Amino acid sequence: MIMQRILVIDDDPLIRRQLEELFTERKYTVDTANDAEEARSLLEESEYALAVVDLKIPGTDGLSLTKEVRERWPDLDVIIVTGYASIKGAVDAIRYGAADYITKPFQREEILLATEKILEKRSLIDEITYLRSQLSDRYSFANMVSRNRAMHEIFGTIESLADNDVTVLLQGDSGTGKELCARAIHFQGRRKGGRFVAINCAAFPDTLLEAELFGYERGAFTGAVHDRVGKIELSSGGTLFLDEVESISLPMQLKLLRVLEQREIEKLGGNRLVKVNMRVIAATNRNLEEMVSRGEMREDFFYRINVVPIQIPPLRDRIEDIPLLVNEMLKNNPMARERNITRVSNKALQALMSYSWGGNVRELGNVLERAILRTSGPIIKEVGLPAAGTSPPSASTSTRSRDYELPLKEFIKKAEREYVTALLRRNRGGISATAQHAMIDAATLHRKMKAHGLKRDDFREARRESSRAQG
Ligand SMILES: Nc1ncnc2c1ncn2[C@@H]1O[C@H](COP(=O)(O)OP(=O)(O)OP(=O)(O)O)[C@@H](O)[C@H]1O
Ligand SMILES: [Mg+2]
Image (cartoon, rainbow, N blue to C red; front, side, top):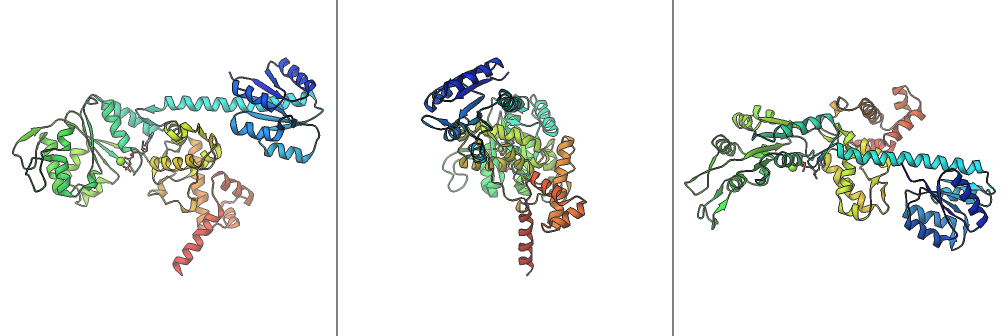
């Protein structure tokens, strides 16, 4: 149940009493303040659902106080009471952030109606906020959040991996959360007491990779002045995470294959065999089967690492995760926490959910981080996404609407956005041509474009650029 506490700010004692009686009758809790000073100290003490502010109050004026209140307590709605009905007064009241305004002398019904309308909306918002916080708990696993069915199957798989040492191959586009998944497998499993040792195989040329993985003994080569323990040995008892496994050369694949089969290594420059015992997790954003068929990866190595394959879906195929991810990221971002930034506006959320996310969850994190830097209030209103027409086309555009994991409503919404985008692109932003093709009127098209965050100019831009490229 939400708190229904109302603050009345008016220097006229008669009005104060009148409003107090009226609200108390309706079972609201009421406090009154004579001026801005008193109002501020009350606002700092208690949490109010609504403030009723007179336009003329001592210490400041009602409009400035409204503005101040809306900035400092953005969840608090304000009704302004004005002495005279003027359009300008009304416009100002709304512009300064008031939810409504009432002119004196007012009717009881009039003010009660306005109050109820506002409080009802507020209780809805409270409920959404509450549900949002519930969602995060229900939909989190290890450090991952998701409410997507495919992702939940992955969570289930990870759980089933907890009490064995089976090798896992994580496949997914860049930024989908492969490393996060690998860590979850390690830390949920029985090897969590051992080390999680990650190595990015793309970061080293062949000879260095070998030294990194296998370690060496002093004097193995020029520069090897100390013994060095390799990552494989280091991971013994824990997990070895071979990131970007596709970049391992064919000869190195053979060496690793032997390790995986025999569970022992020979250090460079040594003649001693060291027993190792670790779980191996490999990750890639490439299609390894294709690499095998092209001879770029050894078939036997591929089968060795592809014991339990896990395919992580791209973010654009689970846009229902975006609100959860945003929530999670805001909770974990130190600057957002410091500045009390708790959510993004619905409009911004809609923009986030309509974007194509070529860089997946990582890109979402980056976009949000930039938005946090630019935001001063408690709510992120602008997320600054690249325009729709210029966002990098995703790899599998043609299969995008075939995502049956989504709830029907989201599926249809997504398909509609793709449809409108494609037509606008084809018609270079031409509204009447697009509307005609879709057999809808121009106003409907405008409405849909707005709902999906599509701007006509982005498609015109494409025309200019392509004609430049051709000419
Ligand atoms: N389900 C999720 N819940 C919360 N955060 C996530 C989730 N998935 C990914 N992230 C975050 O997104 C970022 C990218 O994830 P990660 O590094 O695991 O991706 P990756 O697939 O390894 O990317 P790359 O291929 O670029 O190496 C990280 O900051 C990670 O914490
Ligand atoms: Mg990674």
